[in-house]
Length: 289
Length: 201
Image (cartoon, rainbow over all chains, first blue to last red; front, top):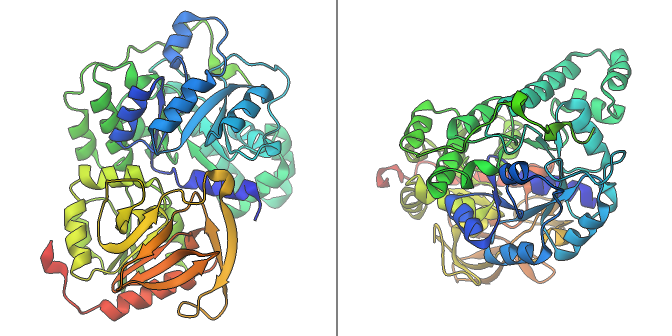
């Protein structure tokens, strides 16, 4: 069995879980205590990157190492799109996953990283099935919606998840002779399209990310068919991070149980301030292709 | 009809369901609440993040009821994270979870994801052919109590054990096409059916 299959299997173990953005050891411990299945170590959460502007790069390796030492759950970190040297550094640290992320400023406007040349699993963002399959074709072991990070607005994540799910359903219905043309239309490798036709699902797990701020947002994404949740700014930009983190974990487990989602949504304090998408200067989801 | 529950707080739940659905006369339910534990004949604790699943068991008040049920005979099978949750001791960790399986288990025992691997082995008690074994950031057992039967030792490490109604494997049969371990667990449930344990919740 090859390394890629083992990496896809590893991502399966994260299913039904919540992965939280953290910027220091203290936040990482809060996330672990709340039941996160992994943490994303980064210097600034997307909401701050958005506010402060400038070029956003891979985090300081020392800060990532400290977080790695502090928790027993897997640790992920982000690299800029196309910046394979940042990825080499993260692999040298012994990080558990690399997120080739549109939240950071892209380093290459033509090409994503050749993820097959790494031993470490990669997660990548996608807005639709074609984009998801291109990333998988490059070697991503896990996919997430791009959503619109740092906005506290779930509308883009919903759009991307609905788009991916509806295109998967379409592939399942296509007669064999129409698959190649559809692959051409959406710019996807045809062998991966064939995989979906045969297995009725993506070849890797698919998480929701980008704008999830409340337990109800998390449950909404789960009911739309994702395998798990990334929460970025939503937790540590809210009034009571520990309680909100626990509530989002619980809502993700019990996404089909309105009574439990109601209970955990009560008295959560202030959610992060949300931004409307058309007020944005920079839509991160448009980075990458 | 045998009713098997999969602890569905987090992890590789659907993979176990898909394996069990290939076997006849099995009803599979996702277990997310304590009261559901009373309705099943056996429970699988799947692979996932043991720290997260352990915390959620406590948070949802399932830890104590489940522990009592296992101690009174509910057949249970833990894969990977499930093995860690069942253990009475975890190396380098003071915290234990269900505290029912008399072993000392080491988390991520082989190292990081780069040390995940596949192998295969013949386990006479389970099947008459080689079974594929997938280890993902897997634990292994370093020490066993007297009542624990070792089913498989691989490269000097204990990776599958049985103790009365408890089965634990470091590897993930649910990620392969091979159904031997699922069938083995079903036979175990059949052997325990009729023994009353439900009154203990």
